[in-house]
Length: 132
Image 1 (cartoon, one colour):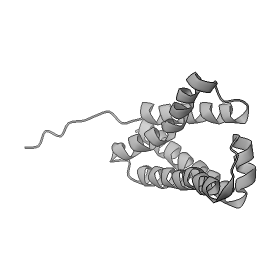
Image 2 (cartoon, rainbow, N blue to C red):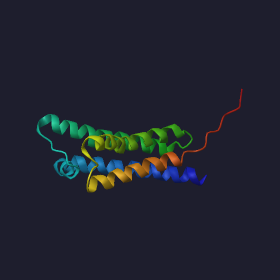
Image 3 (cartoon, helix red, strand yellow):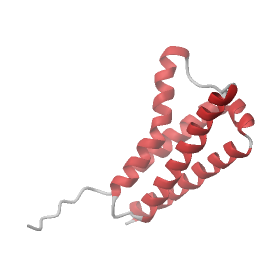
Image 4 (cartoon, rainbow, N blue to C red):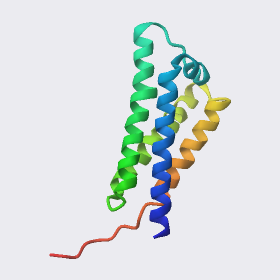
């Protein structure tokens, strides 16, 4: 029971943080891009930025909110965890080619990794329905 409550709160926290990140990206995209080391040029650069930093963050927020309200469907929380873990996974792949992220981005990466792993660790135990 405690695991379910903790997971629900963590999912709501992920939804809130993802929503705020998307909001900040919409309000001041140039500042957010600079802080992440992204250089946007032209319409395509901004379009890609909005796709990743607004679209994907809002999708993650929506999924996390849905999962927090439907604790009886743990797969929603699992998918949310995969969305969250996709960011540090991509950064790990990039680390082999160009190195680990630095500064604020490294901190964000660690937080994403811990949050995603915590969601998976708090997953309810599998119970098999024996009705036939």
